[in-house]
Length: 201
Image 1 (tube, one colour):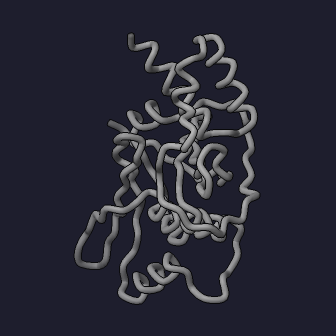
Image 2: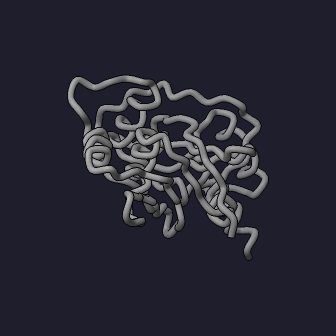
Image 3: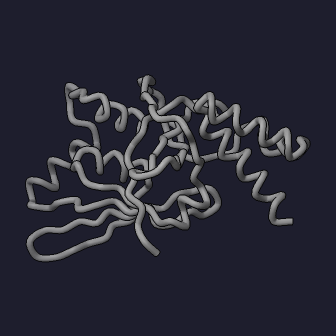
């Protein structure tokens, strides 16, 4: 299946999960978005790079970049290749002068590194069909400055999924439009999943 190139659209604070953030990836030549829930530390590492800031001391991802360059290793691209139980799986495609390696990575770390190495991010058409949200919104800004660390991803304490099950299909579609309009990407993902679950019956 062909690869779909992605760009980092921005980061927003999670509306349903305390201490977590939604990383939004955008299809390069389309209007589909993939929201991915990440921890505070990883969100900070991505936001710093997006905003062109230089921390007083190297962060872990900066250290990885410096280490790789010191030994002639380059990050060619990042591939988000699998989605399982709401978790995205990624691989780093690395090369030096002698060999080519593919290294397993959390998607949040992979994106943080891709920004530092200035390399492309890809996923599959299957994943973007499964997890993507189609938007008419043209712009998205990363206005948050995260500073808390948390684990990725987990169910909210007050299960949004259970609340959605009690709504009609028409109500779900209206709620989805509202969530997308308000850029509540994580919430929109859960609503979309409930709509698709009903369509399969």
